[in-house]
Length: 390
Image (cartoon, rainbow, N blue to C red; front, side):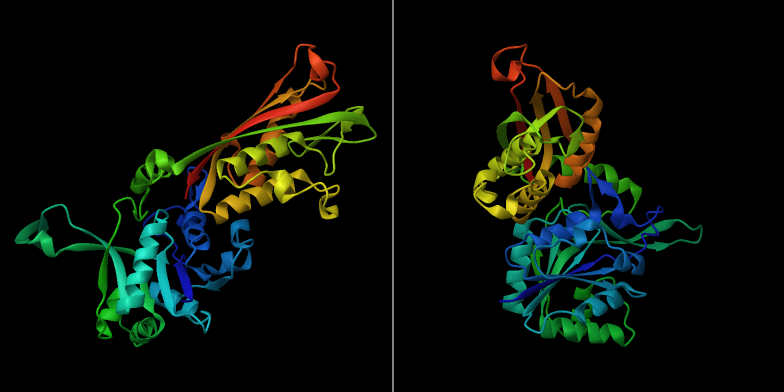
């Protein structure tokens, strides 16, 4: 079964009040990145189409350029349904099921996406929804301008719609055709209903919130920091590397070239900071180490930038549905003194990992003159990385 995901991200966020809401950072990653990544890393999704404001199509963020699977960017339309229709126009002909998702819902889990796709494949159309927990009142506006209760609605029959919403290709085509004839709707499930299709409910998730106003941001930050899986969603890895100092080589640490009489010996640029952090990241994901993925017997890695290797390691773990929470590296070197370069190293490493610098720690230590490190014959790094499931 071929599955396409459409991410509706063309809105201007007028209720939010500040710029493009989808570019707001939540715990170090934008809302758009989180929403798109959930589908790029999903094992059942074969391609992703993102409907965006025109200026983002012309100049997309970096995370929309390096996808790992087919990714198409299209300009949105005047209404949400017009944006989804534009995206549907580039869906692969082989697509059997199309799943539509609001970019403003950055916390849909892999399991929820899987269940919704499966239900649509069986029944034709399905949407995630949560049953109302509060007592529901139908109201009308009284003469004084106040809302007055008209009746109490049995909450057992009230479900609050979310995304993902998934459809067999022909069902979504019918739904969007209904929308093109002028029927406005706030979601594709409504259009499918109007086109005569039955839409199945899939149990949604309370954490799958929609970020609509600034009041939603604190809850979003809490969800992002805690993850949807608690402790089971956290993984820790350690890394270690050591390289000898030799004449005739530049000294590169954390992606920063540091003025010094000697540099580190190695097949690549021998950046021990990046190597140790990459090993910690790969180890936390149980994905081997840099020697396995970038062996020094392979000529393509001769002289390679270790920042590039670190970026590749981060991409590998993202493809497994994981992201870097934070990293901490201790650099053991007698000389040179590293304090003037620490902030630049943090920035370079953070960029390679796709996280903010405040989630990267780099510390310089000496070995108090003891051993080969103390004799300034080598530099070593110990690193720890925390990963969490997206």
